[in-house]
Amino acid sequence: MVRKSSIPGFLERYSDGVDSQESKERRGGMSSVVGCQSMDGTHVGAPIAIDYRLSTFDEVMTTAHVDELVSEFAEKLLPLTVRVERVPTSERAAAVLSEFSKEIGAPGLVIAAELTKLAPDLMTSLDSSGISWLTPADVAASRDAPLGISLATLGVAETGSVMMAEPTLADRAVGMLTKTNVVIVRTETMVPSLVEAAAALKALALQPNGGYAALVTGPSRTADIELSLSLGVQGPERVMIVVVDALS
Image (cartoon, rainbow, N blue to C red; front, side, top):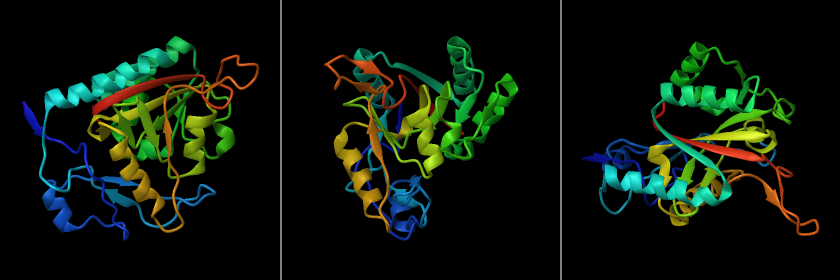
């Protein structure tokens, strides 16, 4: 099977926040929108549309290639004890989140607002499962919360990293201050290498007032005190990745 894919390739920046008709036609109308923000975490300017397709030719990705990227991504995270689940739909993703929250004994979920806006079907499925959740109004809402759910901008297969570019400080705190962080990665945003991730970073950095992004690989680890490895000192002590084929 072959299908048009929005991965991987040269990422383009649209400074006015509007995806040009020419670029839409070149890649079949597919783009991804990334918010931009100032250093204090407030949202500024218009979102930027990032083109995940190759700009030099119209690439046709095979399903097998996409599967390889996801498999490589998961393999890179095995040594870090990061669990990676791939699911086809938002409904199944909600079931995984519900099961995982029960597994770790979390009373509810703290979910980044950008994810709730992007995936209403996911939120509906969570409601149907009876699990409680909230979107953080401020940074304090995420501090030491048992389970936080974040949205990745990209997944990088060669390193097992996720690129986080949250539009607000409150959303950013979900992935930094919760004890366990589940990161949702859309399958179509999985890229092969840091080359593509670097292009996305450049697009964010060149926005008016700059932008924020971080490449995160696994849970927080530090060994700067007597060379003793500690988890969760500067971020979540446990990370799980849920790769969703059709997030809605």
